[in-house]
Length: 259
Ligand code: LHQ
Image (tube, rainbow, N blue to C red; front, top):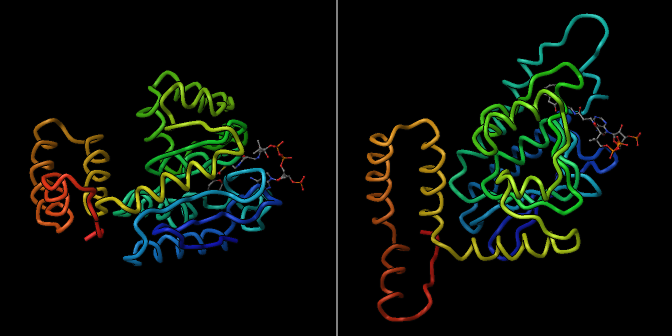
């Protein structure tokens, strides 16, 4: 249900249940977590590209999955989040390498919020983001109630979550919900170009930058200044920092190794 491929220093992880618009079932969750672990551990992988196969990115939870019966006893969806979705979002955020998401088509429910948990989000012009949860009597999950208000503000976050109104890729870009929209045919080439670039950069510093920005959401200025001090201390111990400064002074392009 997920394909994994390494090229040009980055891993391409593709959700692969196209007949279900790549909706999540247990097997896809397992394969995705495994792929993220593999990419995290492989020193030759210095960026990740998450995308979907076929015409959709991800339609959220597979509602036809037998583990979600609507008759009989109520399923414990809290347990499902604790076991599958929350670890996925936590891993994407904790991964010390940049994760780019190429939203190739519709991203609904948990599919939308998993995309928004990535570090840089590109979308095809035909893509849409839908907080579909309210339409089936659920609450946005997978971090949506955290990321959405921070990305687009409380007014838009509430309306999107309460109405389930689809947001076009262009609107998402205009609102600052994602980084860039590209014409459908250009999405993957642009995503590949960005990932290939990221894979040549000082990976450890990029991981620390990601952490600093994320932690700012819950830190006050004092705590954030302390965090910057600690992370800068760590960054300056890396060979890539030495290389960056040396290359600048020697007026040549840097050769970062990710160390
Ligand atoms: C699907 C799905 C799908 C199964 C399309 N499941 N088959 C977490 C914790 C635990 C449990 C509950 O949930 C969660 C988090 C969540 O993610 S809840 C939200 C779940 N997702 C949704 O409610 C979205 C449901 N899908 C849709 O609203 C539409 O399919 C969208 C707007 C995504 C796309 O619409 P269209 O482009 O018109 O495509 P379609 O509806 O025709 O879908 C194509 C096929 O994919 C179709 O199957 P078929 O056999 O008729 O061709 C759909 O049934 C299937 N599909 N989403 N989530």
